[in-house]
Image 1: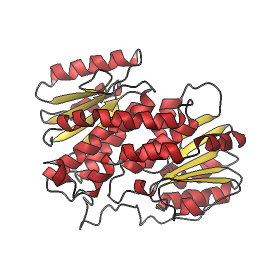
Image 2 (image 1 turned 90 degrees about the vertical axis):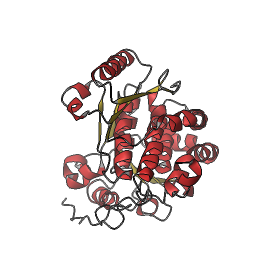
Image 3 (image 1 turned 45 degrees about the horizontal axis):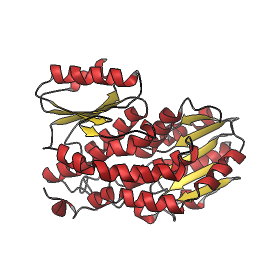
Image 4 (image 1 turned 180 degrees about the vertical axis):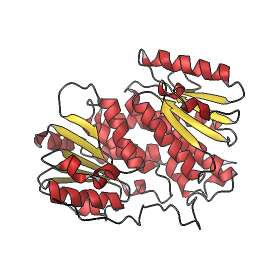
Length: 357
């Protein structure tokens, strides 16, 4: 399938638009001002909250930034957990709650705002959304700051692509180690550099797929698996795991027609464990296809800013492959569940129950 033929899908265009979005955003976003605001809140915990892909952003950030010296404790708290058990999380707490939302209107985003209003009205909020007309953009609390991403990140396709990557990079520029806007610009340059290799490596649609990584790249693997499974409407079953965790049962998922993708880093000893597993998989499953993405990998992805900054670039393979494979399967790439009524672009139909004080 040619790139011209794929361009009829908004999801394809939205995937390829990412480096341009990041470069423009690096110039227009006041990252220093946002960092100053965060520091002024005087909290000892920062929670990164979202549902689905937006929750995985928090997982990636926390795994990637853990071990930084000083500053508040970082936690990933999915809104799907918080809304179900708000008292267990919010009673007698004052964290800075960072909420991610492409639409900013999902049921759990609304439920989180309700829970904060009822149980932690004095907790500061930082809402990062792609939709300037959303609840996340308009509903505030005692101390609320809103970051509205460029309109181009408000993906029209079912699968989150530029919304995921730009929300992640924005948060890294605010809470990370000082890479700031430069981190977005370098990520854009690396995107352009690896895209040809990514496209060349996609190949035919597999029977199933596995994505693996260490630390933040394990959670990038989770997002990658979700992208392929979403875009194929479950037609390509996917699994994700950590490099060391995969041997503990999940390896039973692998068959001859499995595509195995390992996100590899440059950390020691992590890189050694990754190399061992890749060699093992190639020896044990010679008919399966194993692809490595990272420094010196089959797709050579430098990680000079660290693996957490490389996470959206590792996921790029799944974004590209997901579109190519779904299109080859005859799917409606922009709405894989059209006519089924089972999944929708913005999750709805969740009954929100009153928050008990």
